[in-house]
Image (cartoon, rainbow over all chains, first blue to last red; front, side, top):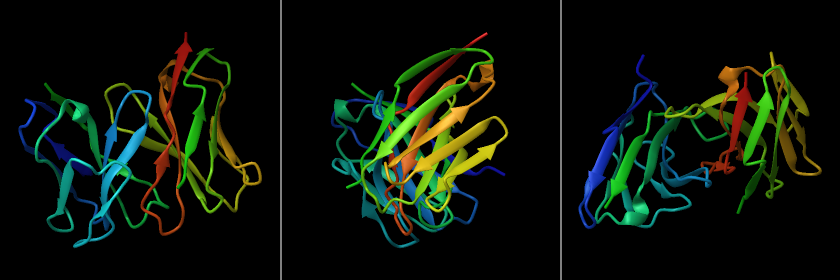
Length: 113
Length: 112
């Protein structure tokens, strides 16, 4: 039972490069989320998808785009990476809204130089 | 919008002692308060949660209390063990909401 799987686990980008972080869940959850984790700042929501076919901005959406490809997959794209986007990124899913437990992926450590 | 403050940022205790982490929230409409534990290099995982219609919930050595009037909730860990060493996050959300707001985290060290 894989749960929530993210790829890649580590990535180094040069400023201005683009990349897509992939996330897939096998728990048949409706809702999926992307967070970033920075020291001393907890987890901040970037984008979320309440259900297949919908996406919405979270607390810190600038510089990112997302795609809910199907019920299982939710990707995060950085079009032009900046050093301020150096962070650990977590994908998560929950059965419905966030009034229930969120299950997290193992994280992607991204460094932008 | 919701704001969650968490204290302390770092907590060091001796094995066997109790640890208490406190959080306050700003939105009185919030009604779900989960706590997540994140071990070094690992993903956050839910350890306990409480809803606004309950004042206290306990699961073995872990308990959470909620004071809706004061808008604060706390995590209590008794008989701490070295494996309790981790970062703990509190959070707040509301029914039908997708924007859970997390506290900044507390790094707990349990010294053997």
